[in-house]
Length: 444
Image (cartoon, rainbow, N blue to C red):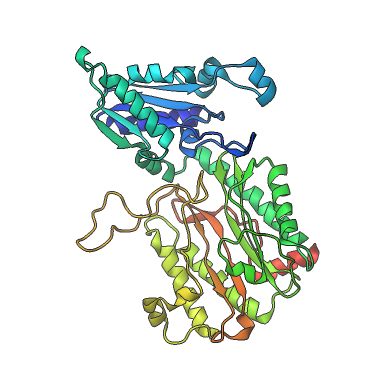
Protein backbone atom coordinates (compact mmCIF):
# COMPACT_ATOMS: atom_id res chain seq x y z
CA UNK A 1 0.00 0.00 0.00
CA UNK A 2 2.72 2.48 0.98
CA UNK A 3 4.45 3.05 -2.39
CA UNK A 4 1.11 3.53 -4.16
CA UNK A 5 -0.14 5.98 -1.53
CA UNK A 6 3.14 7.91 -1.70
CA UNK A 7 2.85 8.19 -5.47
CA UNK A 8 -0.72 9.47 -5.25
CA UNK A 9 0.34 12.09 -2.71
CA UNK A 10 3.25 13.17 -4.93
CA UNK A 11 0.92 13.45 -7.91
CA UNK A 12 -1.45 15.58 -5.85
CA UNK A 13 1.45 17.92 -5.06
CA UNK A 14 2.22 18.24 -8.77
CA UNK A 15 -1.43 18.98 -9.49
CA UNK A 16 -1.56 21.55 -6.70
CA UNK A 17 1.47 23.30 -8.21
CA UNK A 18 -0.69 23.83 -11.31
CA UNK A 19 -3.64 25.18 -9.36
CA UNK A 20 -5.22 21.89 -8.28
CA UNK A 21 -8.14 19.98 -9.69
CA UNK A 22 -9.23 16.41 -10.32
CA UNK A 23 -7.17 13.60 -11.89
CA UNK A 24 -8.75 10.55 -13.50
CA UNK A 25 -6.86 7.35 -14.36
CA UNK A 26 -8.78 4.38 -15.76
CA UNK A 27 -7.34 0.89 -15.98
CA UNK A 28 -7.18 -1.07 -19.21
CA UNK A 29 -10.29 -2.84 -20.50
CA UNK A 30 -10.48 -6.59 -20.83
CA UNK A 31 -9.82 -7.67 -24.42
CA UNK A 32 -11.57 -10.53 -26.19
CA UNK A 33 -9.22 -12.86 -28.04
CA UNK A 34 -11.95 -14.60 -30.01
CA UNK A 35 -15.63 -15.17 -29.30
CA UNK A 36 -15.90 -15.43 -25.49
CA UNK A 37 -12.23 -16.16 -24.76
CA UNK A 38 -10.25 -13.25 -23.28
CA UNK A 39 -6.57 -12.43 -23.39
CA UNK A 40 -4.90 -12.70 -19.95
CA UNK A 41 -5.70 -9.49 -18.15
CA UNK A 42 -3.04 -6.88 -17.43
CA UNK A 43 -3.74 -3.53 -15.76
CA UNK A 44 -2.92 -0.24 -17.43
CA UNK A 45 0.60 0.73 -16.33
CA UNK A 46 -0.32 4.22 -15.12
CA UNK A 47 -3.28 2.86 -13.16
CA UNK A 48 -1.16 0.12 -11.59
CA UNK A 49 1.57 2.65 -10.73
CA UNK A 50 -0.91 4.69 -8.66
CA UNK A 51 -3.04 1.94 -7.17
CA UNK A 52 -1.64 -1.60 -7.31
CA UNK A 53 -5.26 -2.66 -7.78
CA UNK A 54 -5.35 -5.73 -10.08
CA UNK A 55 -8.96 -5.87 -11.29
CA UNK A 56 -10.51 -4.56 -14.53
CA UNK A 57 -13.36 -2.02 -14.63
CA UNK A 58 -11.71 0.37 -12.20
CA UNK A 59 -10.85 4.07 -12.06
CA UNK A 60 -8.62 6.10 -9.73
CA UNK A 61 -9.69 9.69 -8.97
CA UNK A 62 -7.44 12.13 -7.11
CA UNK A 63 -8.80 15.43 -5.87
CA UNK A 64 -6.14 18.02 -5.03
CA UNK A 65 -7.37 21.17 -3.29
CA UNK A 66 -5.32 24.08 -1.99
CA UNK A 67 -4.21 22.39 1.23
CA UNK A 68 -5.32 18.77 1.00
CA UNK A 69 -5.91 15.84 -1.28
CA UNK A 70 -7.94 12.66 -1.33
CA UNK A 71 -7.87 9.57 -3.48
CA UNK A 72 -10.94 7.61 -4.53
CA UNK A 73 -11.25 4.21 -6.18
CA UNK A 74 -14.17 3.10 -8.32
CA UNK A 75 -14.32 -0.67 -8.81
CA UNK A 76 -16.66 -3.62 -9.25
CA UNK A 77 -18.89 -4.63 -6.39
CA UNK A 78 -18.72 -8.02 -4.73
CA UNK A 79 -20.75 -10.50 -6.77
CA UNK A 80 -21.08 -14.06 -5.53
CA UNK A 81 -22.17 -15.59 -8.83
CA UNK A 82 -19.48 -13.88 -10.92
CA UNK A 83 -16.85 -14.85 -8.36
CA UNK A 84 -17.84 -18.49 -8.88
CA UNK A 85 -17.11 -18.09 -12.59
CA UNK A 86 -14.27 -15.55 -12.67
CA UNK A 87 -12.66 -15.51 -9.24
CA UNK A 88 -12.29 -13.23 -6.25
CA UNK A 89 -13.30 -9.56 -6.27
CA UNK A 90 -12.27 -7.11 -3.57
CA UNK A 91 -15.35 -4.92 -3.71
CA UNK A 92 -15.18 -1.21 -2.76
CA UNK A 93 -14.88 -1.53 1.02
CA UNK A 94 -12.09 -4.11 1.06
CA UNK A 95 -10.29 -2.39 -1.83
CA UNK A 96 -10.22 0.96 -0.05
CA UNK A 97 -8.69 -0.61 3.04
CA UNK A 98 -6.25 -2.87 1.22
CA UNK A 99 -4.90 -0.26 -1.21
CA UNK A 100 -5.04 2.83 1.01
CA UNK A 101 -7.78 4.88 -0.62
CA UNK A 102 -9.73 7.50 1.31
CA UNK A 103 -12.93 6.07 -0.12
CA UNK A 104 -14.19 3.64 -2.76
CA UNK A 105 -17.45 3.33 -4.67
CA UNK A 106 -19.04 0.91 -7.11
CA UNK A 107 -17.96 1.55 -10.69
CA UNK A 108 -21.63 1.81 -11.71
CA UNK A 109 -21.91 5.01 -9.66
CA UNK A 110 -19.05 6.85 -11.35
CA UNK A 111 -21.16 9.07 -13.62
CA UNK A 112 -23.14 10.52 -10.72
CA UNK A 113 -20.05 10.87 -8.54
CA UNK A 114 -17.91 12.55 -11.19
CA UNK A 115 -20.55 15.17 -11.91
CA UNK A 116 -20.22 16.11 -8.23
CA UNK A 117 -16.42 15.77 -7.97
CA UNK A 118 -15.75 17.97 -11.00
CA UNK A 119 -18.08 20.76 -9.94
CA UNK A 120 -16.22 24.06 -9.40
CA UNK A 121 -12.83 22.45 -9.89
CA UNK A 122 -10.27 24.55 -11.79
CA UNK A 123 -8.77 21.77 -13.90
CA UNK A 124 -9.16 18.20 -15.09
CA UNK A 125 -6.08 15.99 -15.40
CA UNK A 126 -6.37 12.88 -17.56
CA UNK A 127 -4.66 11.12 -20.49
CA UNK A 128 -5.80 13.36 -23.31
CA UNK A 129 -7.05 11.52 -26.39
CA UNK A 130 -5.48 8.22 -25.34
CA UNK A 131 -8.63 6.09 -25.26
CA UNK A 132 -11.91 6.93 -26.98
CA UNK A 133 -13.81 5.31 -24.10
CA UNK A 134 -12.22 7.63 -21.53
CA UNK A 135 -12.73 10.67 -23.75
CA UNK A 136 -16.42 9.79 -24.07
CA UNK A 137 -16.75 9.49 -20.28
CA UNK A 138 -15.04 12.84 -19.76
CA UNK A 139 -17.37 14.52 -22.24
CA UNK A 140 -20.36 13.03 -20.46
CA UNK A 141 -19.13 14.15 -17.03
CA UNK A 142 -18.34 17.67 -18.18
CA UNK A 143 -21.73 17.94 -19.86
CA UNK A 144 -23.37 16.98 -16.57
CA UNK A 145 -21.44 19.72 -14.74
CA UNK A 146 -22.19 22.34 -17.39
CA UNK A 147 -25.88 21.50 -17.13
CA UNK A 148 -25.72 23.03 -13.63
CA UNK A 149 -24.48 26.40 -14.89
CA UNK A 150 -27.72 28.23 -13.99
CA UNK A 151 -27.26 27.02 -10.45
CA UNK A 152 -23.88 28.76 -10.35
CA UNK A 153 -21.80 25.59 -10.82
CA UNK A 154 -18.74 25.83 -13.06
CA UNK A 155 -16.98 23.09 -15.01
CA UNK A 156 -13.16 22.86 -15.11
CA UNK A 157 -11.81 25.49 -17.46
CA UNK A 158 -8.45 23.76 -18.06
CA UNK A 159 -7.37 20.26 -19.05
CA UNK A 160 -3.87 18.88 -18.50
CA UNK A 161 -2.32 15.75 -19.98
CA UNK A 162 -1.92 13.68 -16.85
CA UNK A 163 0.51 11.26 -18.50
CA UNK A 164 3.04 14.06 -18.91
CA UNK A 165 3.19 14.38 -15.09
CA UNK A 166 3.22 10.63 -14.50
CA UNK A 167 5.91 10.07 -17.11
CA UNK A 168 8.30 12.28 -15.17
CA UNK A 169 7.46 10.45 -11.95
CA UNK A 170 7.89 7.01 -13.50
CA UNK A 171 11.23 7.91 -15.07
CA UNK A 172 12.92 7.81 -11.63
CA UNK A 173 12.36 4.44 -9.97
CA UNK A 174 11.68 4.28 -6.24
CA UNK A 175 13.07 1.56 -3.95
CA UNK A 176 10.06 -0.74 -4.47
CA UNK A 177 10.42 -0.49 -8.24
CA UNK A 178 14.17 -1.11 -8.15
CA UNK A 179 13.67 -4.24 -6.04
CA UNK A 180 11.04 -5.61 -8.45
CA UNK A 181 13.20 -4.88 -11.49
CA UNK A 182 16.22 -6.55 -9.90
CA UNK A 183 14.11 -9.64 -9.17
CA UNK A 184 12.72 -9.68 -12.71
CA UNK A 185 16.27 -9.37 -14.05
CA UNK A 186 17.45 -12.35 -12.01
CA UNK A 187 14.58 -14.51 -13.27
CA UNK A 188 15.28 -13.53 -16.86
CA UNK A 189 18.98 -14.18 -16.42
CA UNK A 190 18.24 -17.71 -15.20
CA UNK A 191 16.00 -18.23 -18.23
CA UNK A 192 18.76 -17.18 -20.64
CA UNK A 193 21.23 -19.53 -18.96
CA UNK A 194 18.70 -22.37 -19.26
CA UNK A 195 18.18 -21.54 -22.94
CA UNK A 196 21.93 -21.63 -23.64
CA UNK A 197 22.22 -24.99 -21.92
CA UNK A 198 19.28 -26.41 -23.88
CA UNK A 199 20.45 -25.26 -27.33
CA UNK A 200 21.94 -27.72 -29.80
CA UNK A 201 21.74 -28.30 -33.55
CA UNK A 202 18.44 -29.76 -34.74
CA UNK A 203 16.24 -28.23 -32.06
CA UNK A 204 13.72 -25.64 -33.16
CA UNK A 205 13.48 -22.02 -32.12
CA UNK A 206 10.14 -22.55 -30.38
CA UNK A 207 11.62 -25.31 -28.24
CA UNK A 208 14.14 -22.84 -26.86
CA UNK A 209 11.38 -20.28 -26.40
CA UNK A 210 9.55 -22.88 -24.29
CA UNK A 211 12.61 -23.19 -22.04
CA UNK A 212 12.49 -19.43 -21.45
CA UNK A 213 8.78 -19.41 -20.67
CA UNK A 214 9.16 -22.35 -18.29
CA UNK A 215 11.82 -20.56 -16.30
CA UNK A 216 9.85 -17.30 -16.24
CA UNK A 217 6.72 -18.91 -14.88
CA UNK A 218 8.29 -21.25 -12.36
CA UNK A 219 9.87 -18.27 -10.59
CA UNK A 220 6.59 -16.36 -10.33
CA UNK A 221 6.65 -14.14 -13.40
CA UNK A 222 3.12 -13.54 -14.64
CA UNK A 223 3.98 -12.84 -18.30
CA UNK A 224 6.82 -12.35 -20.72
CA UNK A 225 7.50 -8.61 -20.85
CA UNK A 226 7.19 -8.78 -24.65
CA UNK A 227 7.11 -11.39 -27.40
CA UNK A 228 10.33 -13.38 -27.12
CA UNK A 229 12.71 -13.26 -30.09
CA UNK A 230 14.48 -16.59 -30.67
CA UNK A 231 16.28 -16.11 -33.97
CA UNK A 232 18.73 -18.59 -35.44
CA UNK A 233 21.13 -17.84 -38.28
CA UNK A 234 19.94 -15.20 -40.72
CA UNK A 235 16.73 -14.69 -38.72
CA UNK A 236 18.87 -12.70 -36.26
CA UNK A 237 19.18 -10.00 -38.93
CA UNK A 238 15.43 -9.34 -38.55
CA UNK A 239 15.29 -6.96 -35.58
CA UNK A 240 11.77 -7.88 -34.49
CA UNK A 241 11.73 -11.51 -35.64
CA UNK A 242 8.70 -13.28 -34.17
CA UNK A 243 8.09 -16.57 -36.00
CA UNK A 244 10.36 -18.64 -33.71
CA UNK A 245 9.74 -21.67 -35.93
CA UNK A 246 12.97 -22.58 -37.76
CA UNK A 247 15.36 -25.42 -37.01
CA UNK A 248 18.68 -24.50 -35.41
CA UNK A 249 21.61 -25.32 -37.67
CA UNK A 250 25.12 -26.41 -36.78
CA UNK A 251 27.47 -23.48 -37.36
CA UNK A 252 24.84 -20.76 -36.91
CA UNK A 253 24.42 -18.27 -34.09
CA UNK A 254 21.24 -17.99 -32.04
CA UNK A 255 20.06 -14.55 -30.91
CA UNK A 256 17.62 -14.53 -27.99
CA UNK A 257 15.94 -11.28 -26.93
CA UNK A 258 13.61 -12.11 -24.05
CA UNK A 259 12.65 -10.94 -20.59
CA UNK A 260 9.97 -11.60 -18.03
CA UNK A 261 7.50 -9.27 -16.37
CA UNK A 262 7.18 -9.51 -12.59
CA UNK A 263 4.36 -7.74 -10.74
CA UNK A 264 4.07 -5.21 -13.54
CA UNK A 265 7.79 -4.56 -14.13
CA UNK A 266 9.79 -5.61 -17.18
CA UNK A 267 13.25 -6.97 -17.82
CA UNK A 268 14.97 -7.07 -21.21
CA UNK A 269 18.01 -9.21 -22.06
CA UNK A 270 19.62 -10.21 -25.34
CA UNK A 271 22.37 -12.76 -25.78
CA UNK A 272 23.83 -14.22 -28.98
CA UNK A 273 25.69 -17.52 -28.91
CA UNK A 274 26.69 -20.44 -31.17
CA UNK A 275 24.16 -23.23 -31.67
CA UNK A 276 26.93 -25.83 -31.47
CA UNK A 277 28.69 -24.16 -28.54
CA UNK A 278 31.72 -22.86 -30.48
CA UNK A 279 32.13 -19.50 -32.20
CA UNK A 280 33.69 -19.54 -35.65
CA UNK A 281 36.49 -17.08 -36.36
CA UNK A 282 34.23 -14.64 -38.21
CA UNK A 283 31.48 -14.93 -35.59
CA UNK A 284 33.96 -14.31 -32.78
CA UNK A 285 35.42 -11.28 -34.57
CA UNK A 286 32.04 -9.58 -34.89
CA UNK A 287 30.92 -10.71 -31.43
CA UNK A 288 33.93 -9.12 -29.75
CA UNK A 289 33.28 -5.86 -31.58
CA UNK A 290 29.73 -5.76 -30.21
CA UNK A 291 30.91 -6.73 -26.73
CA UNK A 292 33.54 -3.98 -26.73
CA UNK A 293 30.97 -1.47 -27.94
CA UNK A 294 28.64 -2.43 -25.10
CA UNK A 295 31.45 -1.97 -22.58
CA UNK A 296 32.05 1.54 -23.95
CA UNK A 297 28.33 2.34 -23.71
CA UNK A 298 28.11 1.04 -20.15
CA UNK A 299 31.08 3.22 -19.16
CA UNK A 300 29.14 6.23 -20.50
CA UNK A 301 26.00 5.33 -18.52
CA UNK A 302 26.39 7.42 -15.39
CA UNK A 303 24.88 10.51 -13.77
CA UNK A 304 25.46 13.74 -15.63
CA UNK A 305 25.86 12.10 -19.03
CA UNK A 306 23.21 12.61 -21.68
CA UNK A 307 20.95 9.78 -22.87
CA UNK A 308 22.67 9.86 -26.27
CA UNK A 309 26.20 9.46 -24.86
CA UNK A 310 26.13 5.64 -24.46
CA UNK A 311 24.88 5.35 -28.04
CA UNK A 312 27.62 7.62 -29.36
CA UNK A 313 30.25 5.65 -27.43
CA UNK A 314 28.96 2.36 -28.84
CA UNK A 315 28.81 3.70 -32.40
CA UNK A 316 32.47 4.71 -32.39
CA UNK A 317 33.56 1.21 -31.38
CA UNK A 318 31.15 -0.49 -33.79
CA UNK A 319 32.10 1.69 -36.75
CA UNK A 320 35.83 1.20 -36.15
CA UNK A 321 35.26 -2.54 -35.89
CA UNK A 322 33.34 -2.55 -39.15
CA UNK A 323 36.26 -0.79 -40.83
CA UNK A 324 38.82 -3.17 -39.30
CA UNK A 325 36.99 -6.28 -40.51
CA UNK A 326 36.27 -4.97 -43.99
CA UNK A 327 32.56 -4.25 -43.75
CA UNK A 328 33.24 -0.53 -44.24
CA UNK A 329 36.03 1.45 -45.85
CA UNK A 330 37.38 4.90 -45.14
CA UNK A 331 37.93 6.72 -41.85
CA UNK A 332 36.06 6.39 -38.56
CA UNK A 333 34.93 10.01 -38.60
CA UNK A 334 33.80 9.62 -42.19
CA UNK A 335 31.75 6.52 -41.38
CA UNK A 336 30.06 8.30 -38.49
CA UNK A 337 29.47 11.56 -40.35
CA UNK A 338 28.04 9.83 -43.42
CA UNK A 339 26.06 7.31 -41.38
CA UNK A 340 27.40 4.42 -43.47
CA UNK A 341 27.65 2.29 -40.33
CA UNK A 342 23.84 2.26 -40.16
CA UNK A 343 23.76 -0.35 -42.87
CA UNK A 344 24.92 -2.83 -40.21
CA UNK A 345 23.67 -1.06 -37.06
CA UNK A 346 20.35 0.68 -37.55
CA UNK A 347 18.89 1.16 -34.05
CA UNK A 348 19.76 3.13 -30.94
CA UNK A 349 21.75 1.59 -28.14
CA UNK A 350 19.03 1.76 -25.50
CA UNK A 351 15.62 2.78 -24.25
CA UNK A 352 13.96 3.43 -20.91
CA UNK A 353 12.83 0.34 -19.01
CA UNK A 354 10.24 0.01 -16.26
CA UNK A 355 6.62 -1.04 -16.18
CA UNK A 356 6.70 -1.12 -19.98
CA UNK A 357 9.60 -2.66 -21.86
CA UNK A 358 9.87 0.56 -23.88
CA UNK A 359 9.02 2.65 -20.87
CA UNK A 360 7.55 6.12 -20.71
CA UNK A 361 9.51 9.35 -20.33
CA UNK A 362 10.89 11.78 -22.86
CA UNK A 363 14.39 11.30 -24.22
CA UNK A 364 15.03 15.03 -24.35
CA UNK A 365 14.97 17.52 -21.50
CA UNK A 366 11.43 18.89 -21.08
CA UNK A 367 12.50 22.09 -19.34
CA UNK A 368 15.30 23.16 -21.64
CA UNK A 369 14.37 25.32 -24.62
CA UNK A 370 15.95 24.41 -27.92
CA UNK A 371 18.11 26.91 -29.72
CA UNK A 372 16.61 28.37 -32.89
CA UNK A 373 16.69 25.73 -35.60
CA UNK A 374 17.86 22.93 -33.27
CA UNK A 375 16.32 20.22 -31.12
CA UNK A 376 16.07 20.19 -27.34
CA UNK A 377 19.09 18.74 -25.50
CA UNK A 378 19.09 15.02 -24.76
CA UNK A 379 17.97 14.00 -21.27
CA UNK A 380 20.61 14.07 -18.53
CA UNK A 381 20.96 10.69 -16.80
CA UNK A 382 20.06 10.72 -13.10
CA UNK A 383 20.20 8.10 -10.33
CA UNK A 384 17.12 5.91 -10.37
CA UNK A 385 16.71 5.85 -14.14
CA UNK A 386 16.79 2.41 -15.77
CA UNK A 387 17.73 1.91 -19.40
CA UNK A 388 18.90 -0.86 -21.67
CA UNK A 389 22.33 -1.01 -23.30
CA UNK A 390 22.01 -3.04 -26.51
CA UNK A 391 24.43 -2.51 -29.40
CA UNK A 392 24.49 -4.92 -32.31
CA UNK A 393 25.75 -5.79 -35.77
CA UNK A 394 23.47 -7.25 -38.46
CA UNK A 395 25.13 -8.38 -41.69
CA UNK A 396 22.83 -9.53 -44.47
CA UNK A 397 24.32 -11.40 -47.41
CA UNK A 398 25.38 -9.07 -50.22
CA UNK A 399 27.89 -9.09 -53.04
CA UNK A 400 30.04 -6.37 -51.45
CA UNK A 401 30.16 -8.06 -48.03
CA UNK A 402 32.87 -10.64 -47.20
CA UNK A 403 31.22 -14.07 -47.41
CA UNK A 404 32.45 -15.12 -43.95
CA UNK A 405 30.15 -12.51 -42.38
CA UNK A 406 27.01 -13.26 -44.39
CA UNK A 407 23.77 -13.57 -42.36
CA UNK A 408 25.38 -12.99 -38.98
CA UNK A 409 23.23 -11.02 -36.55
CA UNK A 410 24.55 -10.21 -33.07
CA UNK A 411 23.04 -8.16 -30.26
CA UNK A 412 24.11 -8.01 -26.60
CA UNK A 413 21.68 -6.31 -24.22
CA UNK A 414 21.67 -5.63 -20.50
CA UNK A 415 19.58 -3.51 -18.14
CA UNK A 416 21.39 -0.66 -16.39
CA UNK A 417 20.24 1.10 -13.22
CA UNK A 418 21.85 4.53 -12.98
CA UNK A 419 23.40 4.97 -9.52
CA UNK A 420 25.10 7.83 -7.73
CA UNK A 421 28.53 6.80 -9.02
CA UNK A 422 27.81 5.07 -12.32
CA UNK A 423 25.44 2.27 -13.16
CA UNK A 424 24.57 -1.20 -11.93
CA UNK A 425 24.04 -3.90 -14.56
CA UNK A 426 21.14 -5.79 -13.02
CA UNK A 427 21.15 -8.51 -15.70
CA UNK A 428 24.78 -9.49 -15.26
CA UNK A 429 24.09 -13.09 -14.25
CA UNK A 430 24.10 -14.26 -17.88
CA UNK A 431 27.50 -15.16 -19.37
CA UNK A 432 28.57 -12.59 -21.93
CA UNK A 433 32.15 -13.12 -23.03
CA UNK A 434 32.67 -15.65 -25.78
CA UNK A 435 34.86 -17.78 -23.51
CA UNK A 436 32.28 -17.85 -20.71
CA UNK A 437 29.45 -18.72 -23.11
CA UNK A 438 31.43 -21.57 -24.62
CA UNK A 439 32.34 -22.88 -21.16
CA UNK A 440 28.70 -22.86 -20.06
CA UNK A 441 27.57 -24.71 -23.18
CA UNK A 442 30.33 -27.30 -22.85
CA UNK A 443 29.23 -28.02 -19.29
CA UNK A 444 25.55 -28.49 -20.24
